[in-house]
Image (cartoon, rainbow, N blue to C red; front, side):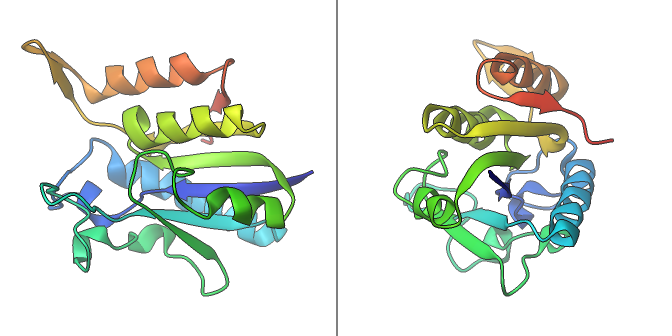
Length: 176
């Protein structure tokens, strides 16, 4: 059984001054960077997933912009794989599954952004594809959400989504 780290969408637009700032992005990226370093020291695969918007109505992760670049805190090494995606699910229409199969990965550690969108969608897909999945909640970030005039804080969004996947689709832990 080989374990791999999948870092999802830790990109500049999610940080202060970016086009889609998330709550706690700096703190989550710091934890993700520690996990990334642990994997590197153990010689385990690290895969970065980078979202590039395709929709003409997109407001962030626009092609060829600084906002779409992977954040410096988790900058991949030249030897590490970068998977470009255009949908929340990192497996949809990407080479991620084939890349993982090629290196015989059966266990994933997933970190990144946005907990309620790309993390949730990818974790559920990974579980459906037969991977054993661990998510480090403190290496993920969310944003405030609004529905029918009611605002749900990013902290509550994070709690809701992590509790929804924990036990059914993944083991959710904190790294720190």
